Length: 114
Image (cartoon, rainbow, N blue to C red; front, side, top):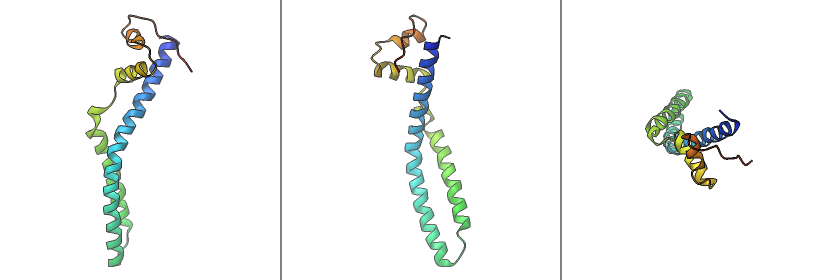
C-alpha cells in the first residue's frame, strides 16, 4: 500500500466516522431530550413526595445509554461505508473519478493536498 493510498484511506475513515457519529447523534439527541424532560418531571414529583432522587438519576442514565444504543441500531443502515467516503472526498476535491479508479486498481492514486 503506497503512502498516497494510506493517506486517502485514512481521510476516508475519518470522514465516515464523523458522518456516522453525526447520524447517531441526530437521533440520540431527540431521544435524550424526551428522556431528560421525563426525568425532570419525575425528579419534581419525587421531591414533592419527599423521596430520594438517586433512583431517578440512575434510571435516567440507563435510559440515556439505552437511547444511544437504540440510535446506533436504528440508523445502522444509513451509515457511510468505505466507498461512500471515497466518493465524497472525490466530489469535494474535484478529482473526476481519480479515487474511484485508484481504488478499483485502474489508475494511480492522486496526489494529496494538505
